[in-house]
Length: 225
Figure 1 (cartoon, helix red, strand yellow):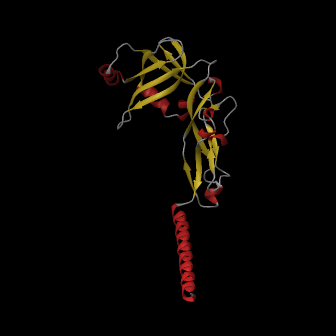
Figure 2 (spheres, one colour):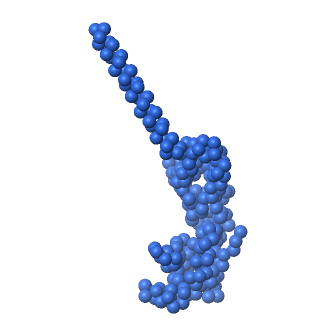
Figure 3 (cartoon, one colour):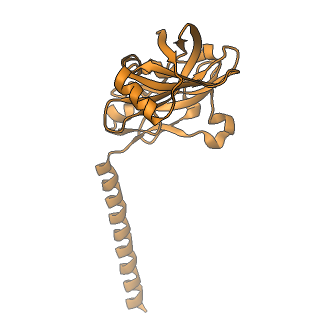
């Protein structure tokens, strides 16, 4: 487990102009902390520090320690706004967490044994992912860093659903809380495109042959009449 600690400062100036000055003059970015019993608080962070932290996948699904001036808070990352064309962080949202209250967040899915997957290695299929992360609910102490999806025994045509995932004890899928109709597909192994086209061609050829046979039978019946 990695402990993430970020240092921040209280921010009084607001607005687009203030945010631009913050980024340009101080190499800092605006952020906000909200949730819990306290009012939302506007803060600023060093761009270099938050950018480095965001390079670590674990940062997105960990309880973070946020030091604001001389006060510390436990938070999770809720949103990151990035520049559409430049490697610049524009704004970050943090949510306060209470160790005794459940939180809702998303954790990444780690797909393992993809190269050894029976549907790929033996049958020549292609892995198609429908999800890369999963929305979960749990107490902060039960928050997993990621959830593994083992592809080893998945054959062509088999679909792995949310209910098939090894979700840790104390953790619940938000989707499954809404019923079986929300048991969405996570990943499957499909036939390669050329194999599908060959199957379609085969079916069409067989259908044409059947049609020709039926026509010949009708002709013979007509001649006998």
